[in-house]
Amino acid sequence: YVAVPCGNVGVFDPTEIHNRGQLKTHMKEAMIKLGFHLLCFFIYLYR
Image (cartoon, rainbow, N blue to C red; front, side):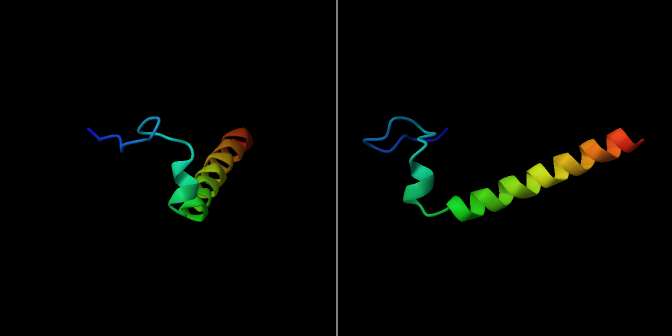
């Protein structure tokens, strides 16, 4: 479904996140998801 650019290892090349400068955006999204799952976990424990 996605063409691999010439010279890349694969579609999900781990170095691409640094090349595009999107690390801050991805970290923010990951922290929001982590916070949501931790909140759900502690609500589950409290019940």
